[in-house]
Each structure stands twice: as structure tokens, then as C-alpha cells.
Image (cartoon, rainbow, N blue to C red; front, side):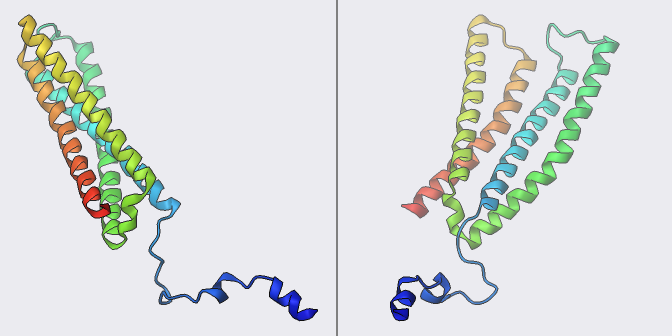
Amino acid sequence: MTSSNQNSTPAPVSQIQPSTQPTGVKPSSTTMWDAFEHILMFISLYVMATSIVLVLYYFIDKWFPGVTQARYSYSNDDWQLGALRGYLAALIVSYPLFAFFFLNTIKRTISNPLLRIIKTRKILIYLTLTVTFIIMLIYLIQLVYKLLSGDVTVNFMLHLLALVSVTGVIFVYYILEVKGDRKING
């Protein structure tokens, strides 16, 4: 009776499957921290990209003012200078965070290729691709509209160049990531 009782109780997993990993080596898997780190990286990317574009817009507006902008309004300059401080503050905070998370996730992905299949990572990449595509599409539609109406200004073209450059770099990088993932995952 005691032998049947002992046989019906399952043995602990560690006794059934001995560990093939050396002591101190983490198993090659993904954790919630990996997904969380990707979320933080993408949030800091969005803040950083927005800040870069807005800083560029500030200097474009300052050096190549639009047709309808009041150039010598002190209250407008005070507001714009305050906005520039905010954009720069966001850039100063988000850039190091993005660089840290980006380099860390790249390093960890090289050592653990399973990180490429994290669902959170894939969702964030495709969301980023979709949003950057929509932003570029809207600005290109505006360009064609302004060309058709004969209302293209240097200010608008420089805004377009700044925005499409930043979103284009992000879009191209993540398209290449998706293509790399497809080659690796088959």
C-alpha cells in the first residue's frame, strides 16, 4: 500500500528532468522583463523622435518663417522659447533611455535569438511601421495638395524634409528588422 502511494505522487520536475545547463547560466527563454524592456525602448523612441522633429520645426520656423507667422511678436517668441526648452528637455531625457534600452535589447537578442519572437516586440514593431507610414503618407498628400494649389513654401518643404527624414529612418530600420526576422524564422 505504501509503494502504490509513493508511485501515484508525481516526482518533482527537477528529479524527472536533470538540468543540462551549467550552474549560473540562464536558460534560453524570454521573460516578462524582456517584453517590458521593449515597451520602454519604444516609448522612449517615440518621445525622442517627436522631440527631434519639434526641435527641427522650431529652427525651421525661426530661420525660414512661414508666410503667415508673425516674426516680431515677443509673446510668441517667449512661448516658442519655452516650447523649445520642453522639446530639448524631452530629448535630453529620452535619448539616453532609448540608447540604453536599444543597446541592451540588441546585445541580449544577439545572445538569445528567442527574443526576436516576443509577441510584444512584434506588435510594437508593426505598430511603429504603421504609424510612421501613416505620418509620411499624410505629409506626402499635403505636399501634392500644396503643389496642386501652388502653395508650396520653403518652410513647408523643410518641415516635410525633417519629418520624413526622422520617420523614414525609423520606418526603414524596422522594415529591415522584420525582413531579418523573416529570414531567421523562415
